[in-house]
Amino acid sequence: MKMEYIRITDISDPLFRQVHNLLSEVFPPEEVLEFSLWQEPLEDPGIRVFAAVHQGEVVGTTEYRYYPDWNVAMTDFTIIGREGLGIGRFLARNRLEDLNKLAADNGKIGRFLAQSRLKDLGTLLRITVKSCSACLQKYTTPTG
Image (cartoon, rainbow, N blue to C red):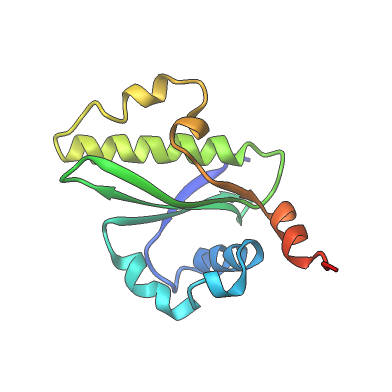
């Protein structure tokens, strides 16, 4: 089954509960915005939150911002929730396509298009990828 790249714009979207759960699995509690407080950021047109959905399940997510005045983008986070599905490349490729469309819609074609020709999009876009299993191990392994 094909993976889908779905934008989340409201906390009532059932996929957002899965995204929030994924954030809670990866990041320490103090770094995860409380569920209801996400409504305003999700409604902000400059903040883009997308879920990678495989067989009805959120298996990855990314949040980024696009600043049309400067034609600059910034990735806030990218999370890969399951290994072996090519989620990192899927999110990077779809994020790049979305950014190219945003740039074109703002009359600023070129900046992101050149990047799509490079082999390693992850390195170019400086993606911070956290694997759930690695992070869970880090935060649940007793120290002592």
